[in-house]
Amino acid sequence: MEITKETKLSIDRRKKIAVEAAKEAGRILIDNFRKPIKIKFKKDKSLVTNIDLAAERKIVKLIKDNYPKDNILAEESKYQTSNSEFKWIIDPLDGTHNYIHQIEVFGTSIALEFKNEVILGVIYLPVTKKFYIAQKNKGAYLNGRRINVSKRSLEEATMVYDSSIRYNKELMLGSLEKIVDKVFNIRMFGSSVHHLSYLAEGKIDLDIEYNDKLWDFATGLLLVEEAGGKATDFQGKKWSSKTKGYIASNGIIHKDILKIIGEKRL
Image 1 (spheres, helix red, strand yellow):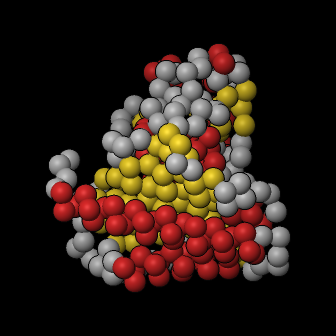
Image 2: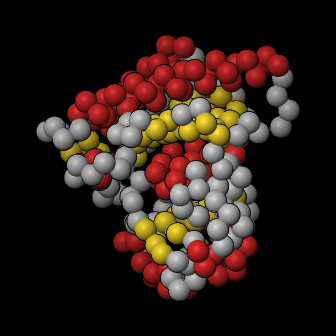
């Protein structure tokens, strides 16, 4: 995709808003962590809190104040669409269940699409004050330092696996059984922004997710790719806004994983 000089400047300006919005949302999350919160069940039996909503409102306000015509896709609310070529993809609080249970594994993700392609993303983990940023063809960074995926083999790999097994038990337990003896160990953190940022900076080597939504993975998969890793669907096709389930890895082990568990979704 060719991007004009004018569009590049426009993206750079939006990057500043994304950074500011993520930090403002993180401030809300930290200020209310371990305090009484209101919790509601959503239709899919996942949870939402008043803090998710407050953080989302802060992000959306900053975007709308600066770019009122841009489209917004957010986890917790629907917003009117326009014919803008820009779309913001927002997860104000990834790891809501952790947050509710006072587990310090949560964060904020904000991605930006241009002409249906994710070209920019930021992740903020407010507990550790880690700020990740990735831009198409410009690398992945953690607090200003460039990061890269690991070079470990499959036998050495630490894998993170989707914790939402209840949604499709037969498929996910079957895949887990195929791979459990092929990797070194397995973790479940319950927060995609942590899974994918850990992968991008080489702390883990593989992440397999079946039930993530676009707002869960848009920034994270770009971050992994810009850090030198690979991300595809289960058939090995490049991920997109329509992807349902993905494999993200350090790239070295990707073909092996596809052979082991690559399959059509049930």
